[in-house]
Length: 88
Image 1: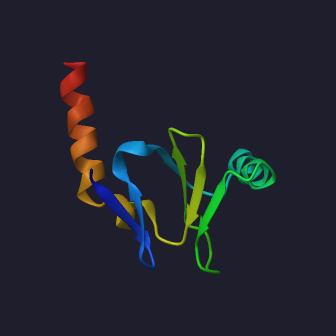
Image 2: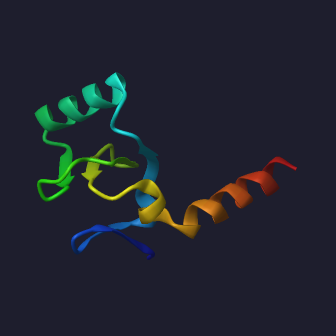
């Protein structure tokens, strides 16, 4: 089981991540608000500004203060390479 550091000692299972989004758009803000109402929001920002919104396969939404590039690092590069080889 591969774990991702999402900041401040918090870790998530890499295999559960479905998407990583920017928190700036209105639809994502509504998604965060609804997740908070439904008690499906995990706040891992520790009071800092949200930089990444992570959606899991269990429909939980995780907000964190680290950028997606910092969280996923080279994992994002290998995922893109994997997707490119699948298309060929």
